[in-house]
Amino acid sequence: MAVPKHKTSKSKRDKRRTHKKVDAPNVSTCPECGEVKLPHHACPSCGKYKGRTITSEEE
Image (cartoon, rainbow, N blue to C red; front, side):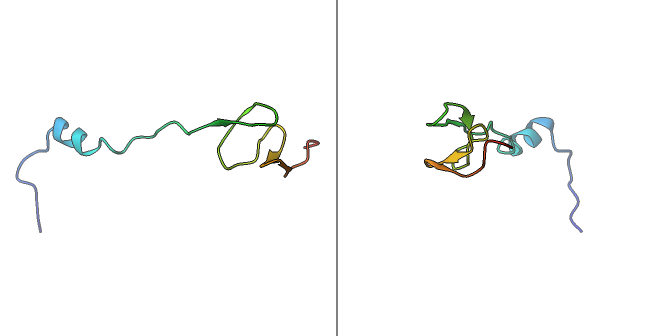
């Protein structure tokens, strides 16, 4: 069974983990109401997607 011969330093460990980070989600504005929304999703404010009403405003 393989066992490490030396302790992995904090620097070496952290260099390996550089790609494991969380980025902020991309956001776009709704062309109908101007609110911030996720791209390729219906607007949570007005309920429209690509000019069509997907969800009703009564909710």
